[in-house]
Image (cartoon, helix red, strand yellow):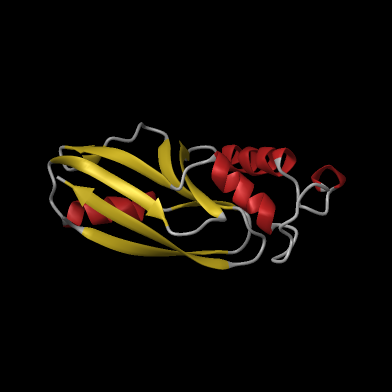
Length: 140
């Protein structure tokens, strides 16, 4: 079964599209039909399939999650105990728990079965830059 690992460098919270890298992996393996599993090897970021046409969607999602789970120094977050790695760390774990760290995408005719406006994103939940590892595993 073909498998590879992608590294995505982030520069703070936000959505980082990597659909083109996934498309290239699929094309290189000439699979007619199958299932691609995408898995991120971290606990403070996640994966999303989301609209990739209007950049306002990315901005609004980042804003929504920031309001839903503010930094641990926010008065509403006084219950947080895990603060050793900074005020963005426990909120990042919560955001990752609310989203997905693994997604499956069907392949047909050698192409990802994404909709017209769908892209694959790493959703970084930490403030500092990180190098995130994403595993792509193809099952035919």
